[in-house]
Image (cartoon, rainbow, N blue to C red; front, side):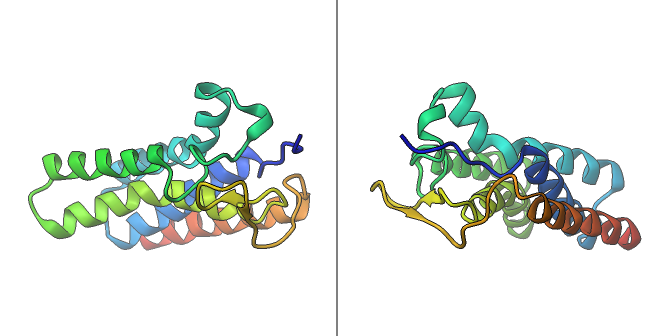
Length: 161
């Protein structure tokens, strides 16, 4: 049985919030709307783990195809829901693209961060996993650096408003 290894939850949360807050500040989005979408991105950024642990209850198969793959049916369904939601909310194509991209990014960054763990992420249907490097999820230096990047992005976002 594979040992369960995951990037710390707080790392996913801070990084998701930071990157989305910064990107929205570049778009000169209203501060309140920016904060609301950035807070939503925290939930989106940990959603693959929520699927694993709360919905599928797969503690022994963490980062399986359904939750941690860029071609997962759940991820593809999520993208379709976001696109439909964007089409309902916005009339201009650039708004639809930007809004959709902003709400899909936290999930993608979750997969990117998890690809740095020794257990990696599933790319296709096989049991073979993609791994960038072998960094332990509880490596305090790595988690600190990623959190620091998120905090720096928040600071740049605040300065950009």
